[in-house]
Amino acid sequence: MDDSVRAEIEGLTGEELVDEDYDSAVDGVIIWWRDGDDEDELSDVIVDAYAVLGDDGPLWVLTPKPGRPGAASSSTVQSAAKTAGMNAATPLTVSKDWNGIQLRAFGKGR
Image 1: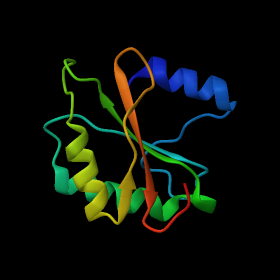
Image 2 (image 1 turned 90 degrees about the vertical axis):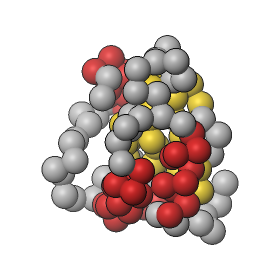
Image 3 (image 1 turned 135 degrees about the vertical axis):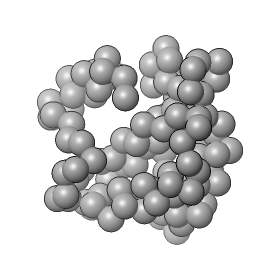
């Protein structure tokens, strides 16, 4: 993860982010993903994250931007999302080094 992005999110929300070991319902999910990580594992991570997501909150996958070390293809995220039963939006810039892709369960509103 990128500590500066994490600090910015915590500053905007006024809440401390929890890690993957947290097992109660959450208001939103951020998954940090890099190229070289197993795409099948990403699908599993998405399914697990969605299971603890309360009230259909936002679910984002953050990846390094193209040209940065660890940059993951948006098609990798889209494929993993589809396998997990989710739709992937177009990547958005979240910082100078990171893009974010919001995921929604099939059949959910815009």
